Length: 111
Image (cartoon, rainbow, N blue to C red; front, side):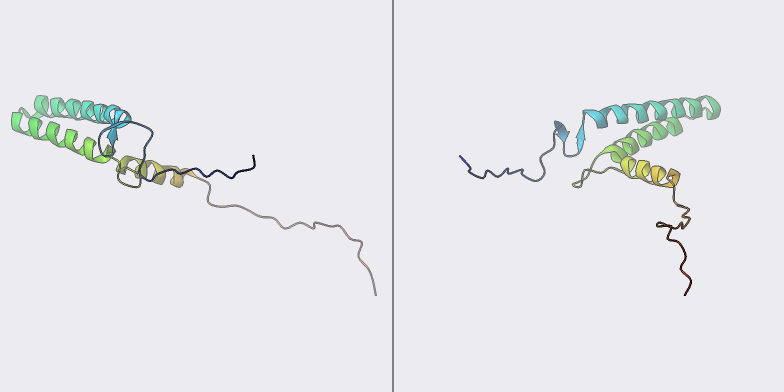
């Protein structure tokens, strides 16, 4: 009755299904948002400059950059995650003012 059981968790197993290594449903949503932003930027450049090749290159660069920034590596981190961690660290409190106080108020003894 008192047998010790061990749990084996293999390395590299991820809870979400992925279409290719490091890219699943959450990354697809992030890529869609980045691609939408690149479409808006390409349309803006097309209206302002009137150059179709510039707009096409901007759109394709934005889509490929959003895929590369959201794909996770072997350590389950992406470029976007690293940027989020750096921003959160920059916002975090880094100065901890400390005021020393007497912990035990002993009456002063005179020799």
